[in-house]
Image 1 (spheres, rainbow, N blue to C red):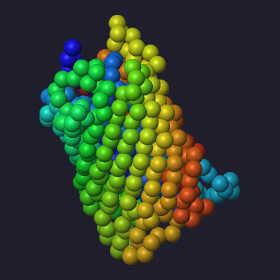
Image 2: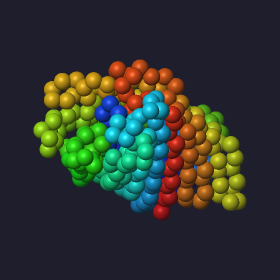
Image 3: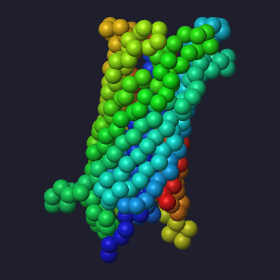
Image 4: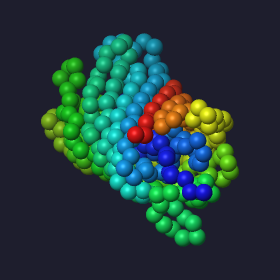
Length: 334
């Protein structure tokens, strides 16, 4: 029996705001398929799904990153980073069964200790596209209809996107200075691209893999500093396991376990590699996803379990130095 691919997309891909030695980069949206039957979708790792043709998707994500602090005697004027909070709203549309397009608008908050907010506001808008294909004796574009057996084939997506310099790259802090790591835009477009692979191995278990990059351009700020943020490379793997399904109420509950590897290139400031930027880190993620009718709610706790950062002792507040990250996503198909 053929089934319409009535999936709930939990979204696609990366955008955000960059970092210096004392600030984390950003929040990242994720792509995933949802249904009472069929493959599961993690919270942080992008799964391989496209929107049904003619369908819209609304999406909201918040990523709250609480930083480790080290100096209890730190006084106002010489503060450590407290937390970063990354909000992201998105809208997607299924142009064909195998091609979906998206637009994302982030809103970032970066706050130091003692309640002083260094920056908050809307950052660069982004647009992107996702092409879905599968392997069933041969590679093919994703069809409009698939049986439950077909959904257990290997599915893949290729995605690519670009940010638009709509945010204020020259945002000034309370003291009138410009800190590129706390700005509200990159000044120039950034490019993101990647590949996902998803396979449902049993009635309840789904494996998901993702590889992707974000590349930045050099931008000269109003204070004459020229900065190029380091390339971000992500390698993710996840298992989603269906714990409970209630067809009568159209409810499903999944558990998720993920490993997220992130490699950050060293930032370049005025032609020279910036100290205390870049490095490698591995995060562990434990989460859950709830599905009800055409809606999905994902919740996850993410923590660094291994780091190898450049000048690590100086990177307080950067990625890899969090106490934890709490992530929540909500999506609805209509």
